[in-house]
Image 1 (cartoon, rainbow, N blue to C red):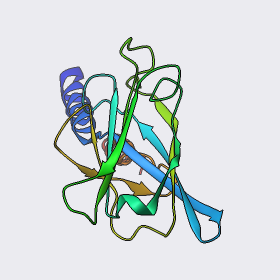
Image 2 (image 1 turned 180 degrees about the horizontal axis):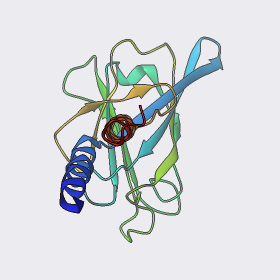
Image 3 (image 1 turned 180 degrees about the vertical axis):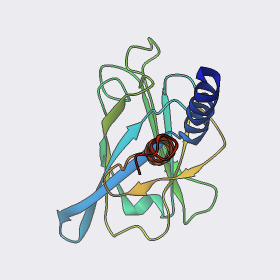
Length: 176
């Protein structure tokens, strides 16, 4: 009986681990004079299995649309206390990039289960098209999500499995 209970629980836990993904969420607000402020939150849910030390944004806009003097930097990510900040035109003239790298000590890295805010920039005009990102010098890009962070899919999977298990258990006991 205990083994029959443990196997579904272990499989559910494995599935939840596979559904995790590091995320980059952003919100926009008016910066006045038609400009738009983009503010990002980097969340390390553990899909890379390591701390996050590098954030690369690929922007579907010319670098001339970005007010580079306003690029926000979390402490140790390209500010005077350490780290590096790079920006410029990307592959084509109508695209650009911003890259933040944490200082080399590792003390400013984003640990698994943590999030970091402070990444931001101001665009002279709204950006049309998806903002994509890569982490830790990867060439695999994901799409940044506009809006507040939402619970990861694994949370919903666990809730569904718990409800299904409770229903089945009650059916077997004859209480439903």
